[in-house]
Image (tube, rainbow, N blue to C red; front, side, top):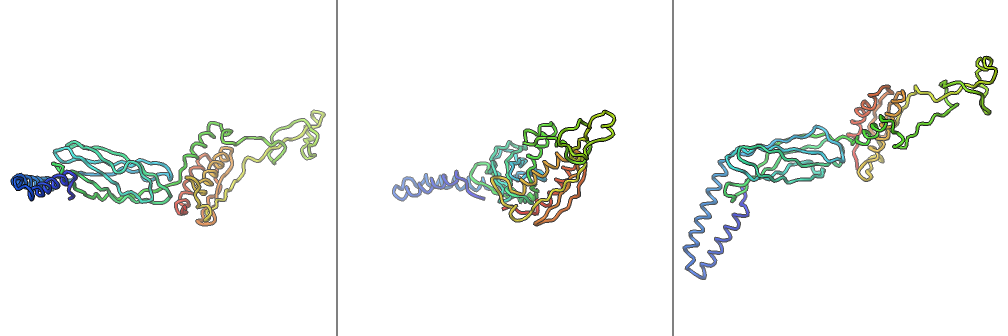
Amino acid sequence: MIPSRRSVWLVSAVLLLALLTAFWPGFELLRNLAAATVSGGLLLDLLLLRREPVAEVSRELKGSIPVGVWSDVKLQVTNHTGRPQWLTLHDHHPGEYATEGLPLQLSLPAERTARVTYQVKPEQRGDGRFDGVDLVSVSPFGLWQCKQFAPLADTVRVYPDFRAVSQYTLLATDNQLSQLGIKHRLRRGEGNDFHQLREYRAGDALRQIDWKATSRYHKLISREYQDERDQQILFLLDCGRRMRHREDDDGHLDQALNAMLLLAYVAAEQGDAVGFHTFGGVKRWFPPVKGGAVVRQMIAGTVSVLLTTPMR
């Protein structure tokens, strides 16, 4: 129990009357009445506060949140008393998280439940622990403050921020890769996959000439090739110490991962098999796989690597 500011002012007034009584004895009766009233009020208010039920607090938090992004944390408070309560809440969040909205203050009517929200922004990947909530309530007469602790242990896992990948994937789905700087250009005459027949051009290699078509059309016909589409693409992801460095709000490893996932999506859409191998720290092997779900599988495969690679 902590005396409120109102209690401090009342006690200060009684002490002032006691000081005046030392010079003017006529204030003695007023001093005694004030002292008895303030003392009785403090005692009665303390007894009433002790008899009241404690407000109930619960926390709503996602099991996983992205690093460097503001995420909502909701606290639900229930007033079990028969009077309105003025409450102050402070959540024991992980110390390395940035917060907005704490401490929370609210006036809660009798026998009502309210939900309040504040925001957290993790600065690094890994597991974060929320220990509990400090709850400060005010007594019926406002003379005391009761500070209580509600043990609400929660653990949240902080993942890399894949919003950029989602945005790029959406553009790729809408065939707007040019906005990302990716230009589709067919390299004619290169590769080993047959593309089409065309008239002979100066500079074509002899191996490109289709002699059957040439005899049929009585003129030189060349085969045109294109790059192979059914390829296996393997990304090598460096997880060494230099990749732990942060620049602005993102780490080098996160930026490399976003680039890898974007290229993997584009390659998978072209029918290529995509995989990755990590080195320089935690080692993971993801064999090349085809299909539209390969990016999602790669994200799941790299999460453990990113969570175990500290940032600095």
